[in-house]
Image (tube, rainbow, N blue to C red; front, side):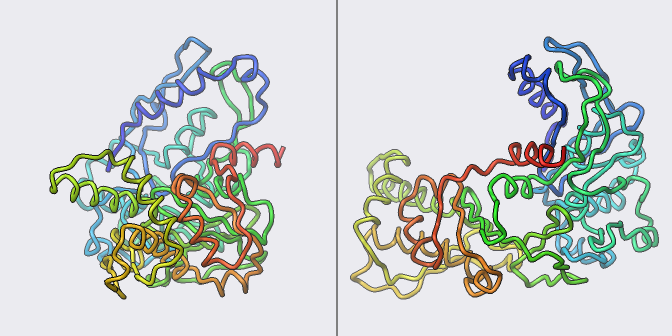
Length: 415
């Protein structure tokens, strides 16, 4: 899956132009975050051109490739298994930057000859703002690319060189929260010479925006679902990944790690259920809006306090068990109402997440409170009831989880 880098930068410029000019002129630090894993290529001396925009100088991409995103599926399991084994605690997956470079190396080597720099899209932005001769990448983004040892903060250069990997494309690596450089122009009126932080992972910044205590766990249910805890200070992940493990360890800040159960099944499961009900209704000759169906099934489920139906909601598989499908068990004639089934689906989403990061593990880590966030959790009272039924901790909802806020907070706390 590819996205147009020029359109992304155009959208970024539109966002900056919409902010109050007098506020932009007071900016002293810029924090930047973005989606991890993805990769964009560019020519160092022709990465962008600076022009005069309506609110001050702006940069526009020049010799820059499309962004190959984390959702890219070009690297098949067979292709990934043909690659050298990384010395990293994170299993290699399609959509990871280094895997994508390997794909181009083997399938389209001439493409790589056109470029001499690479990074995530947010690394590219930092490099352009500061006119970095070689891109600089945080440990967070480097770990998400694969072939990176988080313990010694270095690429697996020896392993990569032996297989002909173009190691000159790998960025230099720095600590999250450090300063990458200073702006070379008054970007949208932000003073020239403003400090720019090294680009950060969006997930880590989202957590940073709401996680104030080590004893908090963050539960986010939007399209997908994540349950996250902060590991104790001094924790180091295993030397090698366990492909069957449901928990991944993401580098956080100050040498700490987050333990993350990232499920592919969240609000998208409920959306599919609503879509199924809509299709059945249409096949029976009736028409009803999906938004109306959603409201009605939630109301029906609220009228049923319990359901003995057991739903495994893994419609979209999971990264550690990609072939697992959804299933329903313990079906009784007395529990076939829309309310019973909806409640069982909601419970299944939470139970699936807790099978990946069990309650016992949360207790052992010292968790005392759950911070609940995400669009699916916000609009679905049944889902919230099941969270409170299954997780034996106080749950606080409505904590703003925002990667941009987190990136700004990181810069503020490190001023």
